Length: 261
Image (cartoon, rainbow, N blue to C red):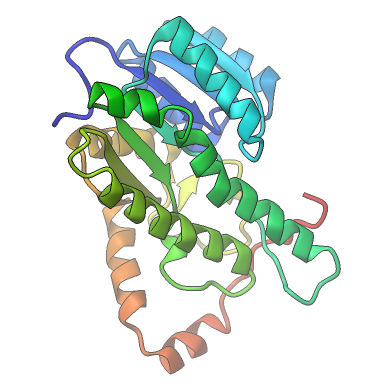
C-alpha cells in the first residue's frame, strides 16, 4: 500500500533540529505535511518551525528517554492525529576506542540513542497505526553498519543493530498495513559529517539526500542506500575477504572521539 495518503501527510521526525532531520522536515513541508519535530535542541527546533509554512509541533527531548517520547507521541496524536510516517532519524556519530578511559560511557550513549532510541520513537505510535492498518515507520541506519569501521566501533555496531532491528520489525508487521523502511545513508553533508578528517566519496547535500529519501519512503522500499553509489560500495565491502578488508581498513581515517558526549 502507498506510504502516504492522498491528502497532506502527518509526519513525526526525530533528530529534526539539523542535518538530515531538518532537511526531511523541509522536504515534507514542501508537500504540505503537518509535522512533529523532536530533538534535544529546542531553540533550533523552534527556529526551523518558524521557517516552515505548515503546522509544526515541536518536542525538545532526548530519544533515549522513552517516557518523553511517549508523551510527545500522545500530544501529537491528540492535536494532529495518527501520523502517516514516523521517522526515527536521531543519531550520534563519534569515534570510540574500547581501551580509552571514558569511551565505554560514550559507547553506551551511542547505543542508547542510535538503537534504543528507534524503538522509543516507534513504540508509542505503533498501536494506533496498526489499529488503522496503515502507516510507515522509517529508521535511519547507515552504510557504516555493513562492516565494522575501525575507530568507530560503537557507531558501526549501533547501525548494524539498527539494520537488524528494523528488519525484524518489518517482518513482524507484515500484513498489518504498517510498512518499515530502512534508510542507510552514505556520506551526507551535515554538521555531523563535517567533523570527519578524511575524504568522503559521493558526498550529498542534505537537501538532495532528503529528496531522495522521501522518494524511497513513498515507494515503500524495504531497504535503500542513499546515494545508490554507496550501496555498490557497501556490497563490495561485504564481499571482501576478511584479510583483505583488515589490510585496507587498518590504514583508514578515524572519526574524532567523543569523550564526555
